[in-house]
Image 1 (cartoon, one colour):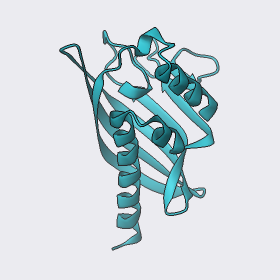
Image 2: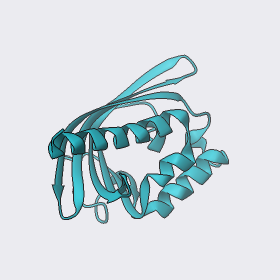
Image 3: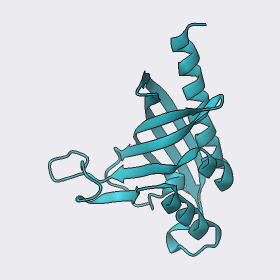
Length: 164
């Protein structure tokens, strides 16, 4: 197997672990995939039909500058201290790996994704792209940065970490 194919397979497996952890609501396993300083960003769409470019100065659907924000979000989901997360839908996360390139001691990956959520008989679908900066760790990776662009710009459902 070539180095390219080995990297592709390793990245695909890793991103698959994230999808499974989200579908299984295995929050500890999901958080463990993120580096302590991982940035998690879901930009909004601007008036020119482009995703916003600066989470510090423009509107975002979700922005956490490090894993602490994700840990807080998981705490609110677990303790039901967020009306947006009660009750939680059943989800199916699907993705296609589009690229996995190595540079600067990281792997930069891009996926297209679709999440189907089911809650109280209603089915909702969100789709988009995700951009990952992955840092090699042991025989796998940790996520240093994840940017998720939701292409479905009009939706009635709550967009939360479990539905993206």
